[in-house]
Image 1 (cartoon, one colour):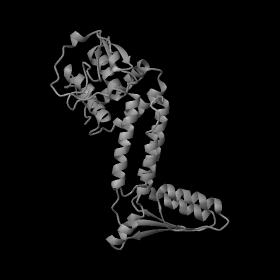
Image 2 (tube, one colour):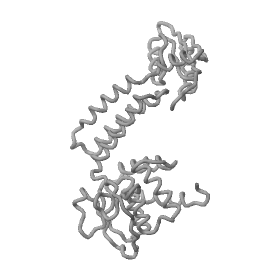
Image 3 (cartoon, helix red, strand yellow):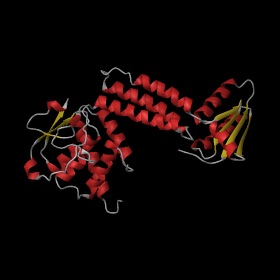
Image 4 (cartoon, one colour):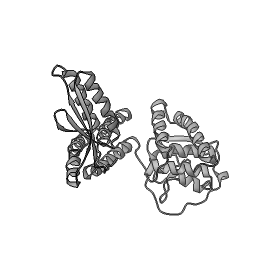
Length: 320
């Protein structure tokens, strides 16, 4: 969230000397909201910040504790004064500390298991989100932090799912579905977005009697298997298309409106680009399923129902 308003809220509090515990509780609360301290008991927040509505609750709490509280609207007199106020919300030091912690996290032993890696990523994500939530005027530090966070997340993903494919140039040949029935299909284990969606597409629209083998490494792919979503596989990224989209085009399914919308969602989650409203929800459901399911067979069965529902949703008349 980037704010440009010159309007602010000032919270001024005065608590009895005996109210040490409420004083500490309120201080922690204003810090969590991202308020700038003007002096002891005086705090500033941009008027349009989402957190601003919570200042009234803190004012009410202070008065319930026997103190006094004022919540005042403040208007910057000119651009210079506005710049002074905005400078109070510079989060560069917060980002610097977090980036230092992130650098230490990147030194994690390569042998860490999936659960430990997920915990490490969630811990850093919570710290990053806490800063972004109160970074009302993002600048260069925010841009650098975003880039390094993306690198860190990609590194974690690579450790959990080695062998992410690189796109190749060329045209996508049309295939005859009748020549691809009852086949063995293989991809990297620990299914994530493109792989689980591609497996569902194969099973649902290409080869209803497909058998799947989940590989520890692409080199383990049997010679008689149809590999997908790894370098050298029969079906993988081509140009700007992810594996799901390549399978669509290969088997003449790219005219299916519901599948095309699904493909756009998978594309955005796998390699970025314009996202869909449903993308974040699907990613969250998939992450939860990975924690619950005992293996990739059960994960595909579980997520298959979700994909069926999304396909029906995207295929509905009137769906943009």
